[in-house]
Length: 430
Image (cartoon, rainbow, N blue to C red; front, side, top):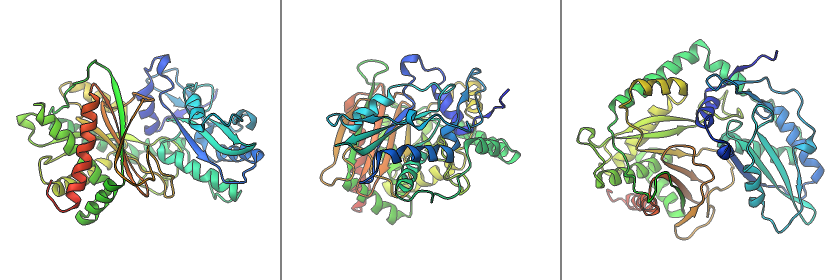
């Protein structure tokens, strides 16, 4: 019998989010990327490169035993992968944009017990490779790991055999997390959850959607907001992520209190779920797997001047990230014992990717006025009001996905965030 090992805590978080999805939604953990290939790339060179990456990263060769949903396991990485012809296909329809190919590939769910959780397709133009469409299940790789695969693919195409020793895989990560030291860290993380839940007020955004369960999504992209956030960060000695978090938390808090959803006992505190990348040590930084986990933070003084709020958000975020690695099953049991514990008022993720990543987000890499683009959500997995911020070399983009909120409410939150950044950057106390 093949010996299995526990999931890492990041993999377990993904499984916890998706285990009860109906068949019609099992594609939602998928993510698609469209990677431009270097000019002159030969068609026959791409499959060997993908094969080399799969051999380098165990996550690309791992299947899962999910028969017991309460105790999912990962199988040993397959020593051999299927023939490369099965891993890539060639699309020759020049009229079909690569993004359409990506959506079609991402719409097909993965059977994680039978197949590896990724697929790729080579898109050609005028008979030559132009793009590689890469689709992966979130349990295989998070945003950092996906971009790492992208950069390794480009390096292997242009300079084969120079990637260096492979990083450790998710099974090694799991072994570390369940070691005595890892279990001590898990206990500390659970204590952090308990402390925050005990102190958090039941502040919540109003449910003002025209129908229950409706999910809307839009992305605000602005070069001026990026410049403003960097100005504030430098002036106050905090991170750009902390500045963006403060602007979002302030916008949410004002909406909560304006609609009477604050509480007299809660003061100006707001509980926020933060996405922790959990790649803070050199050993695990380049491991290709999903390491992201939600962790709660209590942001104090949300009615304070923005400079104070930015510092509070920065330090509260850092304290939360110290406890970002936890067992979601233990957290679920904790919440079951304390049914009165409030839900987070909102969730925030400042996406971190390796240096040199391509611009991201609608309108990324462009100047001019700020834009707000409405999108059809590919997935509705996740918190009720979730802002995903991404900074590239030119812009700051913030994608807001929200359930039971009107479009007007979502737009107002993003424009509030944008305007506060610009005002605070010019020295005013917003």
